[in-house]
Image (cartoon, one colour):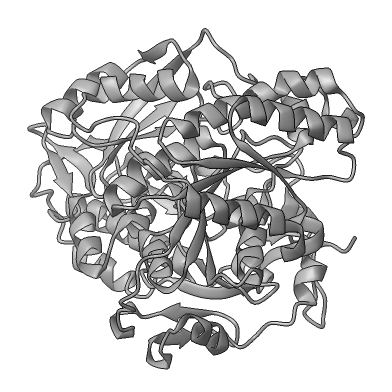
Length: 555
């Protein structure tokens, strides 16, 4: 089979205005970035007046090196719905350069179920991440300049919580010292870098409803604490307007298409292991206003992405999802059952049954939010009939629908059964969506609720300074915010090596910090880092471009 980039390069794309025309977007609202990408200026788009479309969330089991295919399933389902005659829109997050050049690869789908132009989407796209990086670092510069120029806000340099960011994995920048040199080179202090997707500005961009909401949220971001222990905000530094200027285009959703010319809105890109893992509210609501079916996604497994989608994004945006697709593969479930990656092609029913406990737990977790679900098995050629029958039996026992998906190899045609099942759920089953917890619970109570009900932990343990931070954030009035857990994506626990569906463990919280602009408390657990590193052999080592512009090695 051809590589992803080869398939993408052979795609017959339509000019982006034709894709906009399919959705009823007026030409005045379309801002082309070349022939096949555009931003949509919602100020110039008249309200459709139609009833909002059905919202379908695609989530998955915990990721493994064997692969699950969540984005691929999202794209394939969107195309299949369109093939059925439904006006469907695919909504995704933008890829980060860090994982693209690191170990995970891009985020444009795969095989014959991709969004295009794939190379542009994975490499810079429309510049949104660069704008977020610049706005974030502008605030960092203004903060350090304020201190250098006299520090009228009486900021305690040891209590500065605003780092700098860049859109690349670079472990060497996690902990640095700035201000070295002469007196005029700034105040010497410890600092560091996070990856851009971990920036609170990324979270804000994805949760803001419009420019006014964006500015209000930006102004509330806490950057440091003063000598009285009170928070110092971006608004206090008079940075809001300048940051908003840098984000004036980034807030506009991006329009592209799939290999089969289904409209796709790709906007924002917070990771689900260190942030809230969903595309922008603006893109989702715009798609709902224009389409009959909107297929969205939430990063990594349902313990992270789906939980945050329900408890943070849907809560703030007033969204009510109609259906959930839980993606799994036989290969990944066998790996959860203890089979090494080298032996996954061999039939192993015992390991599959054991590893299916991971899928079963995600099914149970999604049910807690009151949204009907279907399990989509992303089929591989090595899957045996006996293995697929076993999975179907397990799903039947759990009371959830089961569908085979072949969108990677067959595009929309391989997703027709899944599309039919999703339509059936949306039209014949009622969603009783509700968040997992009430906001009036304490920070500790909300954390324990997530840990016990979603991860199946015995509880939460606060380590080091986390207990003090818990009290401080509560005393400052932030106790009523939702929780965003930063946790390894590979396990229900905070240990990435513990697969399957473990029990009898605690979740260790080592740091609590407020993202007051985004509107949640971030709980960092285990050894999770907000600046990843590159692997021993980065994907970048296998990438190249020829003299005629042909890209190789990108996926």
